[in-house]
Length: 197
Image (cartoon, rainbow, N blue to C red; front, side, top):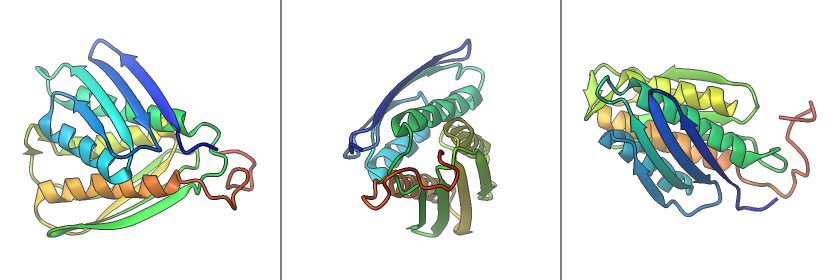
């Protein structure tokens, strides 16, 4: 299996128009424009710390609110991850990380099982960070998990600053996913007793 695994996804609805390319075997380069500065920052951090190359262009109905833009970007990212992984032969499948960012400490674990599930134990009490409604952080990861067909467990272990907490969650997810998509020469097929993931 090549280290160069990529996908291009386009999704257009009455609410959003999204174009994304994702390279799993990248170097952390990102070109992101979602119209929401803090979401751009999170996706750039995701790319940099996961060593993924990511291009994202989103035109969303931000005059309504940020919901459709954030959720649909999560859907497209999940589809891109799924597409870039192909048949998942040779990958480690599981990844985990406990990531500190100043006061924040976040645990993330992922399983590229083909089954969607999100456990999100990250209490966020501030209404928004920048122009991102904090309730949309959970919706973003939910959309990624369901469109990629992957388990995502995120848990806040400590922290108070919402910028730090959310950024730690994105970075921990990036590091966990980066581990899970790595190829292991000892895994010659798919890492499951079922025969497919």
